Length: 266
Ligand code: PEP
Ligand code: MN
Image (tube, rainbow, N blue to C red):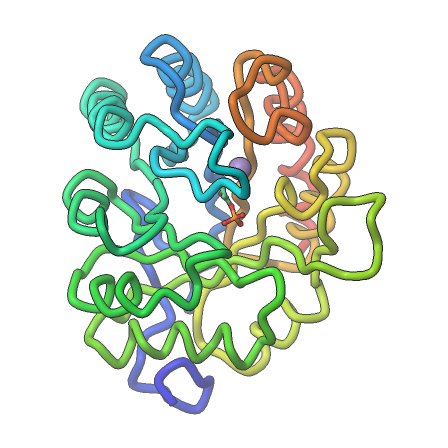
């Protein structure tokens, strides 16, 4: 299989904007930004934060896969255009998710990275369309998906012709309800051992509460992973999605600084 470690012709490196991760690189890409793009003012503040820290990748959802139809669904195309504006003005790489196959062409057109959400991991329309693009794909593991199913979803993209696949562990549904999900670090070890794909971790969605995110992020970096996806919002209290887990910009900055010594020790 193309994702397996034995498949040596396949490069494990994936380039996201100006940063190459995986393979023999030792880079850890920190992707930060709000859960949802909500307004120009909001996403601009996040872009300024990312830029001011010397980071390169800004995230923000525009087509949100909400559990309830009555929750904020995202700004759609207007949000994508705001992200593209931030890319233009701040020179950032933008990352945003496809909720379903109806707007995958828009995501491919506007985003530098195609994020496939946990709930969309089995969406064959998205997987097949992503495989025909050469944009890097951030494939999130479903919260009830086995490692094998996750790798097979990646295989759809790889075998269709796109070798730029990054797997993202974002927590599993377990019996535990005090935290939103349970981050599967054992699974991350498995992916590092048996696949050739870069692995990014998302402690924000796993934990579901901002208080746990910095500790988890440091634990992830200590595992020698290829990147982190962290949600941060200028004012998390009024966030239109995932309010409880988003770090303030001050918390994000403190977390970023605390990661440096951990990264150097690995
Ligand atoms: C997100 O990244 O905002 C998101 C919806 O994540 P997930 O697909 O992991 O739930
Ligand atoms: Mn979110």
